[in-house]
Image (cartoon, rainbow, N blue to C red; front, side):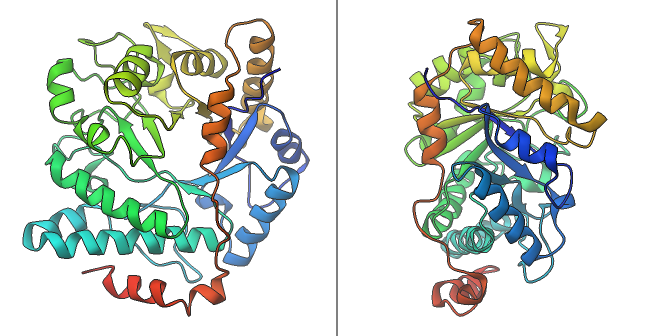
Amino acid sequence: MTTHSPVILDIAGPALDANDRRRLAHPMTGGLILFGRHWQSRAQITQLVAEIKSIRPDLLVCVDHEGGRVQRFRTDGFTHLPPMRFYGDMWMNDAMQATDAATAAGYVLASELRACGIDLSFTPVLDLDHGSSSVIGDRAFHRDARVSTLLAKSLMQGLMQAGMANCGKHFPGHGHVAADSHVAVPVDKRSRKAILADDARPYEWLSTSLSSVMPAHVIYPKVDSRPAGFSSLWLQDVLRIQLGFTGAIFSDDLSMEGARFIDGQSVTAVEAGIAALTAGCDMVLLCNQSQVDGGRAVDDLLDGLEKARVRGRWAANGHSERRRLALLPQTEPLFWDELMHHAPYIRALERLHG
């Protein structure tokens, strides 16, 4: 049987319980995502990640840690990172200074997370700031796809220098729609040609630099009736074939409202997971469900995907598993005390704000 562990789940609180341990050992589990509720201190989060890795060393430990309003850990020594628009604004005054500062931000972000054992942050945001999306807003670097691409590449250079992979999101672009896919099903009525000429350009220009991509829970009806994360047209025909992307593809959170309707029909997380994997996702996320009803939705997804695989409703993919494993850091991190005296880190802190 081909090994393929596609589920990225979460845990209920800042320490593992028996249900968490059981789920992390499940063959469908490939990683987990941390949130602010999992944080108490650096020592606690480091111990938590070490315990997770003791259950399965290959689990990919992820977090949404972008800077600005999306930064999960902010105390006990963690640097407060600016929102990415900060670097877009800096670009308008001094482009070269902005690229160096963005690299510094990537290095600080990744090295601090890695010092606690965390493998991957879902960054950079490649959405363009059209001024209409409140959920994106200052998370975007800039309105101009060229500026966004160069600043994102600079940030990714800093991540790489600290030994961390990257994840561009939300393909092919979430910045043009006002609705928030956490609570609605956004619709972008532009043509495929218009989207590829603007919002999707960073994915084309970064096709050899991106480690992974997360598609948007947005419907582009002139291209496909399905949200991008459930569309083989977007993920296979456009992202893989036309744009040449070879890295890993994560679904966005299957519990979001934008993932609950496919082809106009309400679907379960299991059905959404099957649809995402069949469309071309390598991994699927289910967030913030371990606290609800004893984590029943998490168990349903794990067991449901396993049963669906046996029944042939989706096929385990060895290429997907290799892409997941390739996101794990290939170098040992510096421990926190070492990091505080590490010259590249100190210089990055100095350059963080230009």
